[in-house]
Image (cartoon, rainbow, N blue to C red; front, side, top):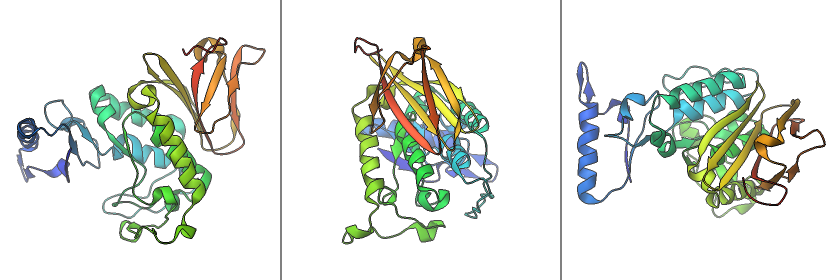
Length: 290
């Protein structure tokens, strides 16, 4: 794969804009040297660069990273002073899902599947420091594993490295000091991405939103032969009841999530007393996958 740094500015100077021509030339060159994938770095809305004949995906700051951060940030605004970024306010789930849908909807579905999703990078704060709360950071990792796209982990985030500011966040990996590792974070990361690696729905399935509230989100990832229910909460919330006709009567927990079943009222209930994340493979009472 080839990644073009600062792709949103490549081929542009003043009134001259050759960005699409540059992307097309690179794409044609790739076909001659058997490079299968062309990734663009873009910090903003990249829809004009993802029309199918140039870049195939982007670093998904606009449609994934920043909306997710703004949902999971503590209620008070957190300072974010890198470059042109203003302070990021805390936003309700309805607003961040609207942003994610509108920005992703402006590009082909294949561009969404090829988007490089991230919760931190060498140009940002460490996610553990930005969010502050280990449980909210768990939710961020869960969404990274479950959302359509190609997940990217900034090396060291899986060990719990924490620092504010891009330069300070570029911390050497503590290979020789395993006592500094957050072993709980590492175990959770392994569980989440092992589940993704064994799930066609999580790797390349569609996306269907089932519930969007201020503090909780619920969606399905669906592929032929498999459906996975994904639940994320940033705080305590009222119980969410989903009809068994939608999600089945038996739900197989993935990545440490407990198994769930429909209650006597014919619904599956999800509730949390604080930040929480879960994934379930949908099955029926006879054990067959939905």
